[in-house]
Amino acid sequence: RKARWLRFFEVFLEINGVPFKRNQNLILRLVVEDFDNLVDLECDYTESKHLPRSDPRYGMTMLDLMHDGDHRLKVNSLVKYHFSSINLLALCAAGKNAMNKARILQHVKFDQVTSRLLWTGRRPDGTVETEVDVDGVHYVRLAWTKMMH
Image (tube, rainbow, N blue to C red; front, side, top):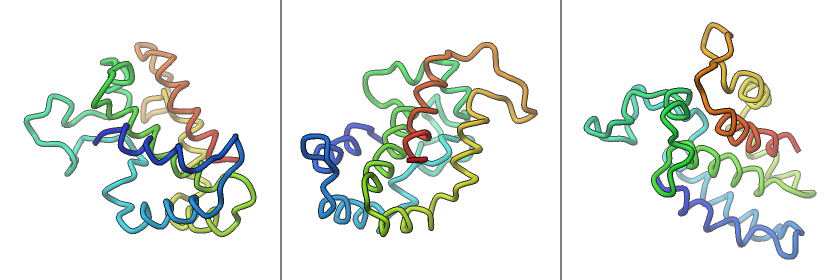
């Protein structure tokens, strides 16, 4: 899972800051074809088919990854891949592309977006994780905030 691969497509989605609808449609169609393998909505690798068991990050949740500084890695960051997945979907739905917004809502429910905004940086019991890097929490929330537009 390499965030750079997903970020490559971002260049084609806007021209001079204006969403380019034809490219949005094309890229979203490509992503939707293999949505479950390409898009990381959870950043939860406790029982992941995307990581080998020998990977030290296998078995980690997003909080564990942020605690270990995964979001600061230059390459192979699973948190950055999660961010890039959400950001790519948000860019595909940017502007007045109602059709793409509807297609994305088939895969990402609104309550999932609000849940991620509210619960990122919290333990399952709702308490705030004090050991996690606040920059990592902000980084992840930023992508989910883009999904709300």
